[in-house]
Length: 129
Image (cartoon, rainbow, N blue to C red):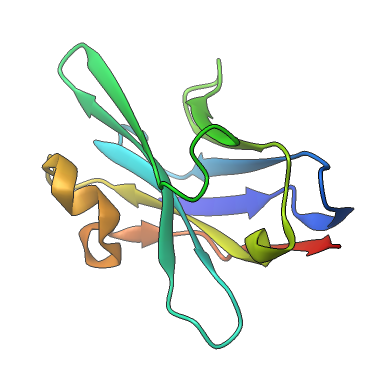
């Protein structure tokens, strides 16, 4: 499975962007997918995740983006989006999408990069003040 992230760009504070993460390869049935971001000189940090547990879907967002960012899955099952509204300069980072394919993670594991066994290449989001 390969993940391809896209949709980044240069925007002004208060603007919106929608990032996409498309999967290709063999049949794609992840147990969870997430967006992380990494700003220059900082560690990769959790942004948002979706977890499938039987017929239920849970979404989880970092406190710093709650109410502004929303993770969702498209009608095409192999695509996950991150809708980002009211962007702030501190949201500037490379955004990565990840997928959990081999195990069903517990919720607390969603916040950790080591949980994810497939990553996209990242897309740069730059927010100017």
